[in-house]
Each structure stands twice: as C-alpha cells, then as structure tokens.
Image (cartoon, rainbow, N blue to C red; front, side, top):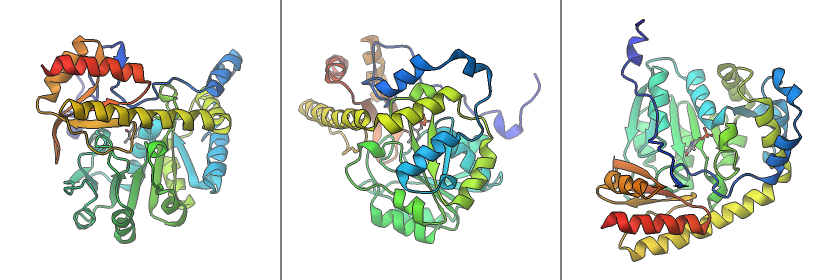
Length: 346
Ligand SMILES: *Cc1c(COP(=O)(O)O)cnc(C)c1O
C-alpha cells in the first residue's frame, strides 16, 4: 500500500453506526419530510441540466441568502453542507500545526476536520451551566475559535455576553455554528457576522430546512473573510439541483419550515415531560433534540436498535457523562421511541 500522510494514518473514518431502523431519531434532520417547494423543483427539473456543470459559487443561492439576511452577496458563502463551509474556513485561516480551539462537548466533526487539516486542537471544558468559559477559550490564543449555539449535542445555548467577549478579544477568526438557529427562542448571532470583521456564522439546510440529502450549507461574514474562504471551497461544491432546491425552499418554503420547526420544538417538550416521568433529566434544549444523561447509554441505544429505533449514544461527554441524544419530530415517532426506551431501560 502507498503510505498516506504520516499525520493522517490513524485518523478514523467518520461513520456513525447506521444499521437502518424504522424510526431514526439519530441525526436531527427534519423528520416531517421535505418542503413542497423542493419537491416541485425535483419534479420539474429537465434531465438535460445534469450533463452541464453548475454555475460556479452558487450565485443564485448566494443572492437569495444575502437578501434574506440583509447583506451583500459577497458576504455569503455556500458549500456542500455546512461541514464543507467549516472545513474550508479551517483550511483558509490556519496553517498546518496551528491551533483550533473550541468548547466541549460540541460538534463531533470539529476534531476530525482539525486532524485532516493537520491542526492542533485545544478543548475547553464547559461551565456548570454549559455556557461558554470565555476566558478559558481566549487563553488558548488560538487563531480560530469555534462556538456552537444551540450546541450539538447538548442543545444548550451560549450567552450573548460570553460570545461578545470572545468576539471582542479573539486574536483571529471566530466561527459561530448556528445549525439549529431555526429552533431557538432567543436572538441569534447573525448580527455579529454582519458587523464584525472576524466572525463567520454558519447555517445549514440539513436540519430545519429538510434538505440533508442535498448537502447545502452556508455562512455569513465580512466580504474580505468570505473571499478567502471561497478560495478554499472551490467552484463546484453545490450541484445544480441542490442550489435550485435551496433557493426554492428559501423563497417559497419558509412558512413550511417555520411551522415544522415549531412542531419539533413542541414535541421536544412533550418528550421531555415523558422522559422526566421515567426519572431521567434531559438538558435544557433549544435544538430539535434532547440530550439525556444516562449511564450505559451505548448499551441502551443498542437495545433500542434491536427494537428498530435509532438514537445517538455518547460516552463520557465532558460535564455530562454517558448520554442519549434523541431527535424530535412527528409525535408518533417519538412515542415509538419512548416505548423502545422504556423496554431498553429495564
Ligand atoms: C448537522 C450539523 C452540521 C452540519 O451539517 P451539514 O449537513 O454538513 O450542513 C453542522 N454543525 C452542527 C452543530 C450540526 O449538528
């Protein structure tokens, strides 16, 4: 075998256990399905479109997002999922060997992207209330800081005061991952992306917006910052169909999305009450999921899978311990999951 880069060899392939289950609450996607506007694009698209390259840098989506957020198109970037936006940002703003810092627990892909890009990582443990320890994060002096709010997997949000302090004092780029902003009650941090030169806010069509299979993510930042990021991204990260569907959902489907997000939140709280009745203590959540601390979560999830229900299990999360992350969606799915959980706890 031809050896790969030395720093590459012991990086694991990211592959969450994916035995297909009838009820899958494992990845926080929109379990209500896809917006009618996206379905229409799929139905009406001419096959001839598939043999041509898309236009570079997804200009239609860029324009539509810019209009929605109230910025110039040059302040918007897009990518093959927000994974791609995050990965491109690391490539654009850090040399191999430099440091990426983030609070833990958080999005599992970040340590992986860091390693693939040859970066070093500093992890900052959570405060008791899961807010950001701004001073500890700043003390890393890392050139890129990653924040996630509402945070995956905890569901908790970061306080305005802590985020602003980090943005004020950071020596370099601050990424704020808002994959779950559509489910949150409070104001988001998009205003910081509009007004500060060092902030990139990322969003995705994979969760509330119902297009996980099409792989569409985006970000907002100062035009000078976005220009560097776009170089790392490359021209053809969005397919023609993905771009057209995202534009359609954005322009005609926001009401559909908002209504489903509201229902996901309502059912999440209904699920919380049932879990509390089982003696469990889910963390406060502003995402479309609940994190439930539970010793032996991996074994419980395994038994739930035997009952055709998939949830995500975590081991020894900082500040939490073992835990299950359960996605919210239509109530009948959550009810099925509850039955499987009750049987698996015995
Ligand atoms: C799901 C998720 C993403 C990215 O998803 P994409 O499908 O790549 O857009 C990014 N950040 C967090 C925190 C997520 O949970």
